[in-house]
Amino acid sequence: MEAKVKDRIASWSERWNTGNTGWHVAGVNHCLMEYGEALLPSGSRRRVFIPLCGKTVDLKWFYDGGHEVVGVEAVEKCVLEFFAENSLKYVTETLTWAKVFRTECNRLKIYCCDLMDVELEALGKFDAVWDRGSLVAIYEEDRKKYAALMKSLLTPDFKYLLSTLVYTPTESFNGPPRNVPTELVEELYGDVCKVEVLGSQEDEGRAKKWNLKFFTEYIYLLTPKTQ
Figure 1 (cartoon, one colour):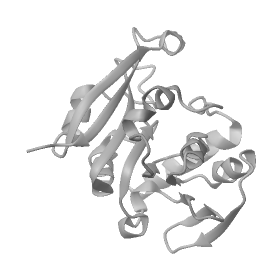
Figure 2 (cartoon, helix red, strand yellow; figure 1 turned 90 degrees about the vertical axis):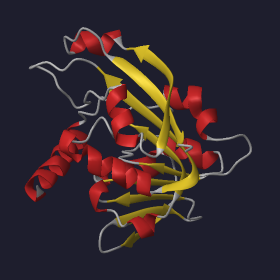
Figure 3 (tube, helix red, strand yellow; figure 1 turned 180 degrees about the vertical axis):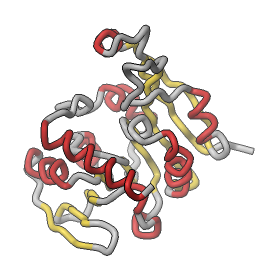
């Protein structure tokens, strides 16, 4: 398993180094623009977690909104590019398990490390999670561990915005991004979360690119499950 983890990180690092980053978008994610209010109640200041954040400008969108933002990313190159491209000054700190990049005001941090190796106490708890491209990127065998990790980081009144992709895998394409149907979301999170589908959108372009019958993005809001 350790060898597979190292291989995974090396694989993503190579994709960043060669510019093979089709998942990265230059602007704020469209789902966040459309459904961000569901994640961030009006007038509130939230502590937001973005797993496998890359160099997404969504980090700065939350930061500019006055929130405290924490990301985790294994590839240092894109962390450095995020701060440079957004003209944000930063300081660094080296921990035993991660290298931390943070703004001088300490309101935006990115931990450079393997997500599965984070120290939960160091990260703390989060009011909000924005998961776009994280659950669909990890290995299938890591999903239960991933979901357990994410659920352990939530405050009692959390809101969790999750974007997944649904398609029928083929021999020529089975991800990443990987197929994550609603039933799997329920299986992974339904023990502690109410799972609500906010919307869906067909992506005919990527369906055609990968010769798939359909390719659908789903957006979910996860909230505390009432007994």
